[in-house]
Image (tube, chains in turn green, red):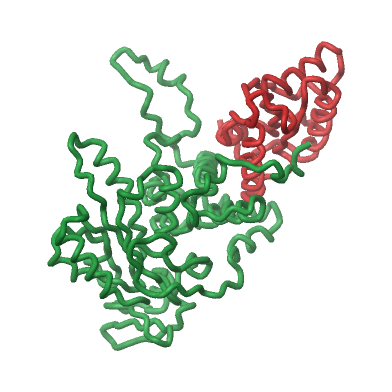
Length: 343
Length: 140
């Protein structure tokens, strides 16, 4: 992992000169090892920034909230917001720029490269720790994860602790940035879509059973939607709010309104909800893995999004989140798009 | 003896080509299976993936989306968008474990009444052995 001293220096300068409104970064968490999002407004607080493999969050979601906040204010502060991004998070910014949701001048991007490491997977970590409590997790020069616990240090090879998304990451350095800490090193990839291939190789019925079992667990808490930097629709298809309910609205009228997807957490509705979410993220998902991490029931939502990422690459030769000037996947077409499935 | 399973197909037909094509099949008195529920849409490009999921959710055994041939779209490029988007939908439905035969797309022009009847005949023939679609169907 990169050292972020230069980044801290830059952040301090930005805050001192008042060039940014505030900086979103990672700070020490209140729950032991895991880092937590940190909002910095004063230059003296910059030293609280941390950068280690526990910085799992995608902070780009806060830019969506920031835009909403700005829209509500009469005289918003138009200075940019500083944000610390990993490789995957920076691609989220690229997609937001591509969709013109934010302007380039709205953000000051402090990029950090994951270099040869990435972020940890908490389930894998819990298994390794076997009940012990981790204090800090660091990466050393030999690319080993060093976990400090009460009972001493544990060294683990990176592959055994890295999150699945990191093992399938194609660019573990920011693709867009104003300052960059660390080097742009690419990790050699054996199978960029390994997890998808595994499910695809199953016969239809087994595939169905797998997804049915997984999506049956969904309790429709919408944590995936809340954590996703791309889920910024003002109105989600699963909870329509635009239909005004007045005192005159009869129960009969309410009942007859179109409900594309019902709210009850039954398998058929859950599946349609997750299919719609997957399609909405087709060609937009940058595989930050936040939906899966936020899911309280550990539904492998990444596999759905990764599938569409794979199809975008194979069918349309489209790679998500690398070029902000490119039109998005489904708002563009080519004359020679495949149509062998059409009669 | 149990009755033979009759699949129910929801067909989204574009107003300018496929819908006119199905009309032609009708006025020419061509015979084709009565399993289709045609829904006229303004363009195949206006068919949201949600319509398709929703049709399956409300009990369709098969969904057909039909539009103008590439280059013939009344809105110049609507069917190109549809082709790209619905390709992803098809892949996703297969990935989740729905039988690939249940979702089909076709190009039918206003003059292709025979092609339309043939597509419906084939579709019904393919759906019959699969039985009712229960995977995405909402329980009443």
